[in-house]
Length: 345
Image: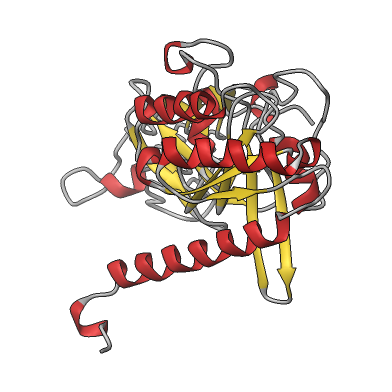
């Protein structure tokens, strides 16, 4: 399945049906009077977040959505049927933005359902206008028009931990070692062209979602390489795992490059908890590992984990540390959302 995380669509709710002008005419019934029914309302346009989707690819082939028009009213006080609603189903984590890219709603949990465009009301039939003065009204209301708007759908995947690093840092190999995901792995840069997700199962009840995004290069925030387009998919994560390729010459420079791009992108990525790891240690001797780890620690000022996704060295320990940070962050968010009356000493 191809990955698509941003698309523009056009939606229109249905017009309301018109009210009917009708009079009761039956043999032996005198003074039948008006009996025009009301028009049906136009269909609404809804958007719903559903589980099981992780791309907006369905909206590449269809960008226009129109709800049904309400049926006109008829004689004998028969009201018209309502128009059919349209429901746009999107992955959890999809943001809905207006044409100017201003946020309308964030579809951040499964089952969330939001009205985008309300259908027009049906018109009143002439029955509504009868009275002592006008006992035979010959007019009815037309149905109201529906709403029309253009919206952007932008997907930001829901993940707990995000993998960042330069191209060829071994992120896809690490993801494959940590989960059942099978991303494309090759010995050249930019193997990963779209984000990949994997479910990490540490033990019964200890699991989290790990996201691998395409590698960053210097100048990514200005559009170099694949740019920072996919960084939005790690905005929602609690923790970043920063992998540095231990086989390259200057590991400190590699770390600085990615950190600079994260800071240039903003959106809080630079402030997230980060686990720094020297990767591919299976290809290095002990002396070189110690030397490069020390160099990386001096540059970053934080402890450096030593791992190998290929040989699965240190992977489980790193994942357990990430899980602990995820749980800590969830606890902080729960405390922030609780009111003063909910606080417990």
